Length: 455
Image 1 (tube, one colour):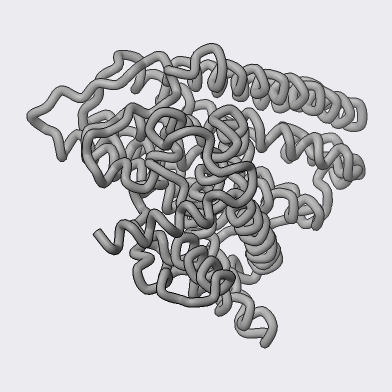
Image 2: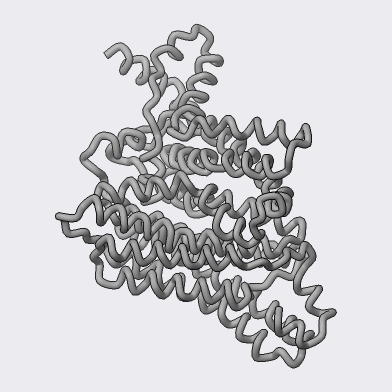
């Protein structure tokens, strides 16, 4: 009882700062929990603030409490050690592959903590603003890495990493979730709500169309290199604007008109809801932590972009394999683990919400936003991901749509999705395409027609 009173006193003291505390009681007015929130909460652990509450200095007490909640409030806290190690390795010019590996490990807990902080801020801003934060910050790691790669004109790294995130969510995360969930619930009939899956599948097919047309246009107009490149670029930019507009409507659909389809059902189990019942840090504390962690993600993302070629050479792996396979697996490990955990508990709606939601956000928001940002920066990035990459994306979306069409699941569906991912990973493992750091569109303008067609 004493411990609970200390925790309640801390919440009153810290939660009352900024915006007048949480809006309403945590039970009645707490924001609707999305699949991403529920997935991230599975990796959190409840903090005991008994010792912190005994610190006499109020400012120091609040600082220590924030450190305990934000840094130590996750089961992945040990991976935070990789962040200072990555900085030391960079400053003292250790092996570049070590910087790459440590930066990837450091990004893993940061991605989960960003989800935690956006959820905490949502207690004070309300569910709508919280949903917008989740819709824009849910894949902050991929977006920041892409921006840094764009700034260095590494367009291939941008395309590879974003393609890898979509493939990873559709095949690896969803496949592992369905496989593990099916094996853990052999005697139970596994069902899920098809309506959310249908909406995400439609948006993914729209994104696929926007990727296919620039590639087909390039192939159809191979006889006129300059005009085809310009036409492909203009079509990609127009398609990106359309995709961003569709994503805005999708957010309105998700947060306002059909919100009930995307809210994860509350669980009766205490471990599923313990971390989401009430705010544990204040609004301004959460905002400052969110900004700080975003800056750290930016720093590690810069390290990843700068060292990926050195890691490729040292490890004997192609840049395409590192970007498409390794980077998404490590960067989203926390979110992926949460999806699998809920599949074990036969909560497939949450697992599908995580996998399909992330894939949709990358395809419909992050990719077109990168095209628009590159346009603003004067960089000619288009939506032509080349034949092999676009073909892999198309088959992945189609296989996933067929897998989810009947609203039921078993382990065989998960196994097929997982094996599809293994085959695609093997393809990019044997592919040895050299990374060209310059803008590919500028290079193609100087190549003869046959070379453009081969590219």
